[in-house]
Each structure stands twice: as structure tokens, then as C-alpha cells.
Length: 354
Ligand code: 13P
Image (cartoon, rainbow, N blue to C red; front, side):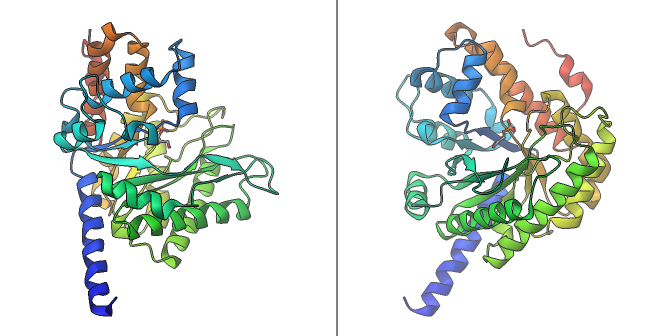
């Protein structure tokens, strides 16, 4: 291809990526992660006694995408491979339902984690083989952003430098392939909450991981304005005896990002990671209240459990519970979109949703 044409095309491509990232980070909105893999979705169904069938997964995802007013607080929804081919009972594809609401559909493109060879207790995420072709197909279907999750756990021995580097390299390879295809990559290096480590240890590991991730993204020529970081909040391990208050967590999280996340990044959208739904909203809210003016990036949510869990528990696989479950889902969307503006209050939790 002529070099000038090639340059113009890549500039158009970069502009499209930036536009998509900006739309995903629109004021007052966040993302809805509904991309649980088959095994994760089935595990959540099993815990509530919901039969683990394809039809039940389809029904549940129909409940989510048809939630009234979802688009008021949701800019983009991350789907799983199975879901992008599914339709409502009435035969309308989930993708068109979302597009009609103005919600950008995205897709989880990683294929899960496996043990990292040679390193006990560490994981590496798979899914790079054949990714270029898969991404081209997803773009054709109208998907405009993607997600890849790397998992880092904290213990006395882990994470190792090798484990962090391997995951950072893989995240950057994925991100570069997405951008080539016109798809905005969400780069998700999740430092897990499992364990009894302190807030300080989580801050140290999260900082180290993000430094490596941004080094790799830079080296592999990923356009930061055309990607979104999906990080964990800086939190103590779930079994740590000392659980600091919301202010301390907000401060630790924002300070960590101020050190290592370049201002150019298209946005930051948190995973919830197993935090209680109300706490996740409260923490996001305090970050905006306290640090709104000093944060150079848009900061929002990209929650799965912290949005869906109350609705899933209400639904329990029963058609009669769909409307009540949708109310609960929308309520969490409202709370989180208020938190994204620093306008969330405890009173919002005291409404009667019955
Ligand atoms: P949680 O919000 O439940 O952590 O899920 C977010 C996500 O997308 C994990 O990959």
C-alpha cells in the first residue's frame, strides 16, 4: 500500500479509537460487565440453584439487556462469545437491542487463565493465537471494544517479576491487535483481593504491575488515548484484619494511579473484584469527591458483580421475577453513575424497590 494512504488510514483508525473510548467514558456513565465465561456464569447460577443451561444464560442476559433505562447510566456492555450470537425471546439480537439504546457492545476476547509454567501459584492468560482474525470478525459484527483480563495474586512469594512481565507483555500484544482492528482494548490487570495482605502491599503490587503494563504498552506502540485501563481498586486482602475506611482506600487508589497511569489514557474503569455492591459505589464516589479536580483521567466503573449480584439473587431463574430483578439492576446502575460524579449518597440505598 502507498505510504500516504497507509498513514491516512491509520490516522482515521486512531481517531475512531479515541472517539469510541470517549463515548465509553461519557459523563455520568460507566460500563456493565456481563461477560462471565461459561464456567463463571454457571458457578454463579449453581450457587443460587439456577439450572446451568444455555437457555437460562440466554434468559438472564435478556433480562439484563432489556432493563428499562439501562442506557441512562451505561455507555458500554462487555459480552461473552456465546451472548453475541443470542437473541431475545422475540427474536431480536442482543447486539441490536444494545445498539438501539446507544450502548456500545464489547467482547471479552481472552480465553481464560492457565498456570504459568515454572511459577507456582501464578497465572497467564491465553487467547492470542488467531486473535487477529477473531477481532476482524467482531468488528464486522459491530463490536467496538474488547476486554482481556490478566490475574495477579498476592502471597508471600508472589507475584514474581517474571509473572508480572509475562502478563504485561501479553496484555500489550492483545491491545495492539485490537487497535489494528479498530477495537478499543480494555486492559485489565486484576490484582486479586484474595488473601490477608495489607492495603500497603496491594498498593505496592498494583503500582509495580501498572508500571510494567504501561512500559509494555508504550514499547508495543499502543495508542493510550485509544485504550481503557480496567484496574482493581487498591484494597487490603479480604482476610486482612485491618480493613481501612473508605477515605483511606480512595486515597491509596488515586495516589497509586497518579504515580503510574499516564494522563493520556482514554479512561479508567474499575472492576469490582468481589467488593460488596454498596461499598464499591461508596469508594468510587469518595474518589470523585476528594480527588475530582486533580485526576487527569476520566474515572468510572466497569462492574459485573457489584451491578448484577442483587438482580441475579432476585431473579433465581424464575420468569416471574424478571421485572423485580431489572429494578434492582437499574438501581445499582443509578447508584454507580451517581458515584461516578461524586453524587452518591447513602439515602439512595434506602429506596423501596419492592
Ligand atoms: P467484577 O466487577 O465482578 O470483578 O467483574 C469485572 C470483570 O469484568 C472481571 O473481569
